Image 1 (cartoon, rainbow, N blue to C red):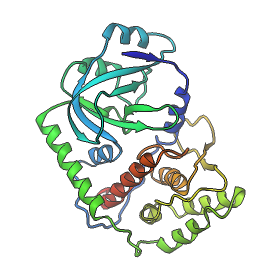
Image 2: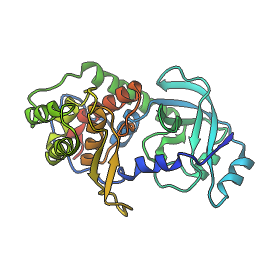
Image 3: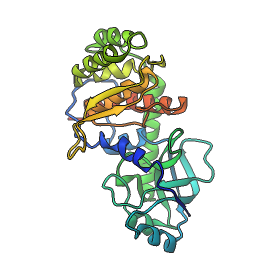
Length: 294
């Protein structure tokens, strides 16, 4: 187990600031069947890797670091028993913040499951503070490995594979043409004019979410790498959230998060091609299950 410098820790907190808002109800029909557990479905969709294995924690070092007034990030090694989602992962090191946060596994949970068969939901960050993190901004990203839980997760992974395999953009969705027309301006306008396009997309609201998702995989570079959104998070420390998207898809991810309160990856400030593909896939799964959120 390795202790990491606090450098870049604030970056992670900024990504979380806009996520702690409640998503409104949705009522859109799709052809996808409803998952038995919506929370699990979102967690699976937002995870790059899902595995069973055992964390190998130096308990004394962990407790000593966690007890400091300003603890550093810790790298937790894990041994993989079975990789259920993702590939090319052999010896994961999980970056973990030992400070108390309600949106991640607790220190007690991590220590309590050390050395035991465990299910880990992980997300991979390729740019910024690179590494593996517990996914989904939820304590449920770490849980004991049981046959029932493993079976439920495998079934949900297969359900999502089918959704993505059969996915096609539906041009009959509400606001599809409005969204298309607005997105067509991006990459051709800059500054305040670009921000007005973002504001108009956000103003379409929840009914336009499926249409935005259907057209979000647009890799055209933005002329101005900036988007500003009103911060609706409870106890927000600033009135606006500011991001630095590189491509159209990055900005649309930020707008979708703004409207729904959901997150599938963190590309609002740009990212790798792999991160963008994963984020788009997560949003497509989300769109397919909107009718289930009643």
